[in-house]
Image 1: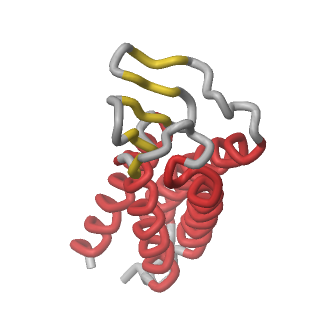
Image 2: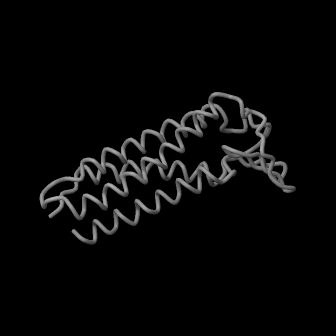
Length: 160
């Protein structure tokens, strides 16, 4: 049981780190023609990063930014609650609050990355006619899977 708890804790920390990296890094869409990429905050080329995106005023991008920040917040809260419940809960109780908070994180990731996929994947709206997904976009989908698995495991898990 201790090994399972430690494994879930490590995966949870990895998920938090990957959420931070995917939200902060500006490599959601990468151009196939030039050395350029675009993220949630900046448009980067080989010469540097511009602080203004051409589509920064769009509501879809603002929604993606908000949901990704919320997912980080809920993931960190879930981690803190898990550690708190680990040392204060009686044996036989479940980690309901940790699991529910992590599933809210999962929903935020799902909504944010789905909006981004619908509006900007494939270079649409990013001024890159031929492009592919960057590592930030892929990390976000990995965090989507991990946060769901962690949330369900917290709900099923009993402290023995």
